[in-house]
Image (cartoon, rainbow, N blue to C red; front, side, top):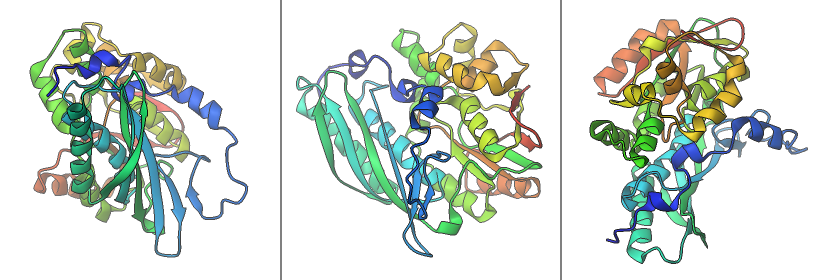
Length: 340
């Protein structure tokens, strides 16, 4: 395998490379098809994926996600990029069927490096229950890889950000801190345990968590990725017309992430996420916990809103299946996001 360092070819990696959420909202404003009767989820408002109804029992879930390298190992990069895209389908309550690669690589990159990315992505798509059936590849000096994914969901079983209700409890299915750990590693400040844990969870499909969650009929679901916990919580609060209250002390953290935040480590995505969400956030916590909550995640966990009476059984169900879940807050009447 070539000794090329993929991260040396990228200006920013993973979901930290996302466009500003605030700017995206402005750019897509008004882009709603005139004849949209069967478009159940699109841009008004946007969600983790688009959903189009085929008939009374079937709807298509369609998403696309790609980004520059965030790790140097090509197979790990392929698995992470695939996981990040596939998890959008699971976050909508659906199941992946088919995926296509979206790729851009320098011509100087060795064939075995590119082949390792493709092969690892194909394995991850298969693990999600789908098939990688082709794709499109361009020449570009900055590598980029991801997937367009089509899945299915019952029209009555779609999960969106818009259904959270006062009295609900909020859960998160993965710890936070991937952006902090990866950014610090690129600067030569490696936290080995944290990076190992981050790599493991960034290749963890949301399939099992979604399967465990489905019987509880969640009020709202979204996956926490590039806009950080506070960015995605802000979207959930705004779409649902509720107030999200997060317990800062309950936020689950990857090893080393808080220490790095305390030492001043921040990604470029941190600033963009603050620009997007800070106007709706009332925060009274430490600087490092606030940085953790704004930290852009790659292939992050599901943020789940469920009625309070279901919380204990949900926790027990995840424990019985040996799946991670953390209770991190509640939903109140009102608006905005509180982190305290």
